[in-house]
Length: 179
Image (cartoon, rainbow, N blue to C red; front, side, top):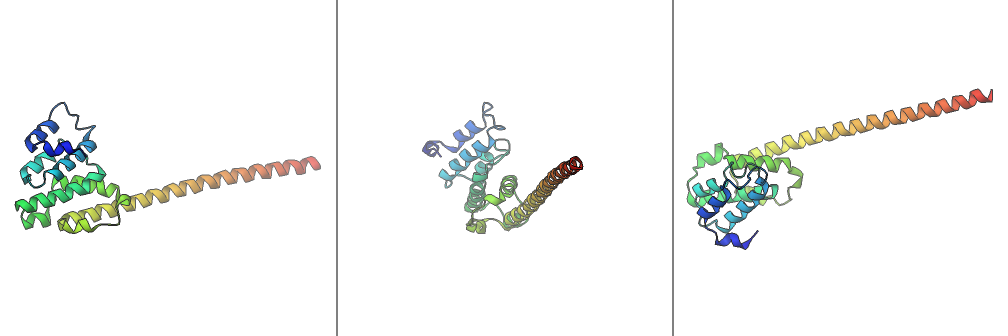
């Protein structure tokens, strides 16, 4: 992350990432890293509305897996410091940003570090959805792995069967020639 981000004010940063010249589709993951770094530097001065503008789906439709946990942490920190998110909302709903972060984290469940202490600061609904999505993805990964192993075993069995048939044919040919 660039220390230059420390010197840019949030409104100017918003103007940069919302510029029509910025290709947010192809650069989304990279932009999410920059936004996370910017928000970390300016965490104390960002309000919830500005944070939501900077993390809007239009600018970062896809979140980088390394930025997802940081953005979730920042959202909790910024919304709690501004006391604008009610306890009811923390428990029963997830924000658009949380959903995008949960999706990318679940897709990369095997990259999680052993240190999950940061999850304690997340709203219960976020942790619940993250675990649910992660379990679903892990089950699908397991099914896909088992299927690919079965296919490979089938191919190897077919190859060995063909090989044994060819060897048997060669032996039969030798036996016939010896007669």
